[in-house]
Length: 404
Ligand code: BEZ
Ligand code: FE2
Image 1 (cartoon, rainbow, N blue to C red):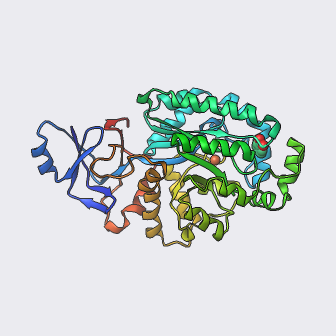
Image 2 (image 1 turned 180 degrees about the horizontal axis):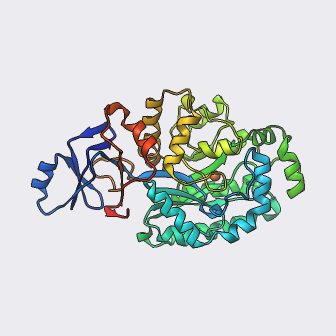
């Protein structure tokens, strides 16, 4: 048993003071330090630095580790030139991204307090790193392929990857999962088969959806920037699905949709009705010129996520939260700060169906300790000061073990 004592604890009921947390691999008890010491006399007491706040470990629900080699190769600014640059540089970027590089990015995420991440995997290349990293990883095996001619082959490869992630050692903290690349890039027949695999095996399910205006135009009318793209690379000028048909494919299974920046209110209401959620990637959306997700109008759960280094400059969750504060500049800053912290803790855990993300008895003992540079003057500003001042967290625990 260990007892950790900080100045504040971030709980589902807000920040609390004068309490400590007793834990093993899970949270056992929350009470005053004196009471806990009496109750657990053999426990090791961890006294953190002054002005520290105990948070549940942060959760980044959407990242692409395989693209970690990108620094300046991919073209930012608008979606289609970016996608073209992905096709052009994909092989070089994949070749340059070895286990060492991906492991460094896992460590970088850890320094920002991320104890769980959702890894979107196109090829399965990052499985070994995700098995070794101490973090929890929801391993989203991604299905891609709009051309019916290759669909069976691509589906077969996808199933092999799903099986490989299902046979990981239990100690690796990997949850196997399924990702659909997007409506424009996955043929409806294999899409439905993959959704069924998720459903039958109770695997988390995710899909990129309505990221760009170009995607919307292509799905609605088979025109716009995607028309030339599909003619050039796939010798076709007809989309394989439309917005409605794609959404309906997920009707019976809650799915984590990434981006949704270009979804209408009606479409968002439909997703909400079906119990879905959104991964909101503010820097990725800004860098690819996709627009701003109107989070103030959402009536479904959402997480804030980094996306990959293919459309970002870091995998730090705090860099992402600071960017969120800037992008959503009309939302009152204190209110937004509190909401953002909830999206990367309790809400993200609910979305990924994991027993973490909250400091509450019975939850997994995944923690990030944030240390403010001085004593906070007003308690109602703790969320904002946390986001603005944290470049790195001071301690990280996963299942009760310290890693930072
Ligand atoms: C496809 O496989 O159909 C595809 C892949 C990437 C972008 C667009 C389509
Ligand atoms: Fe993504």
